[in-house]
Image 1 (cartoon, rainbow, N blue to C red):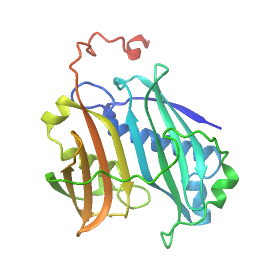
Image 2 (cartoon, rainbow, N blue to C red):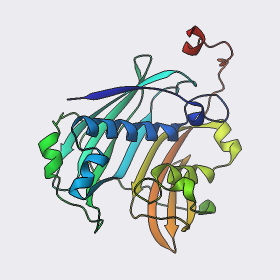
Image 3 (cartoon, one colour):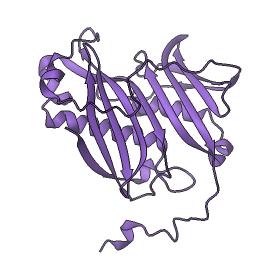
Image 4 (spheres, rainbow, N blue to C red):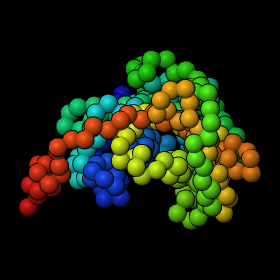
Length: 262
């Protein structure tokens, strides 16, 4: 009932300072694991083309519990379908490194009619998936972001080809990169991501100009990021950060598995 897959942290998914997995890149591994799970049930994206359906993710919710793995190290993602409603499919997950959970969360997925881009009933998913009634955060509740206070920063971005996915709209990683870009390098050097929530509200496309405004909240080191296009909300993101403890551990003397390769 649970599906697992192993990945290695590749160069493109390292952070800038410690050679560790970027927290945001963990989301992309999760999306791939969900796609692989769907592939085992014959309802991956390419299987659904004949039904004129597409997969879209509506929400991701993730918390980080421990240090993230270094470059080249192997991680395991365990993912399962925990609930299916009339229109929503919930997938919960845990990420393991050296048999220890370093991140966990849940996600909400929809099936859309490819022509109308409207959600359709989840009947095909109910037929294919087995439900594992285990929820990482308990019941799936509507996430309500913290109240926005003063604006901390903002940036604009024009979507380019590198932002576009096979559904011809902007991919999820681009929104996360945009939110991350509102933080200064000094802040990212001294803080580590504790949790991240993202809700996708509308699509955006090639050459659209997006604005990402980041706001402080009543909770220290917790920010709400609002991404808009022509004043219309596209995506909401909330990030919480911890002051980073400087570690004496270094990748130079860390026993990387790649060093054992012949």
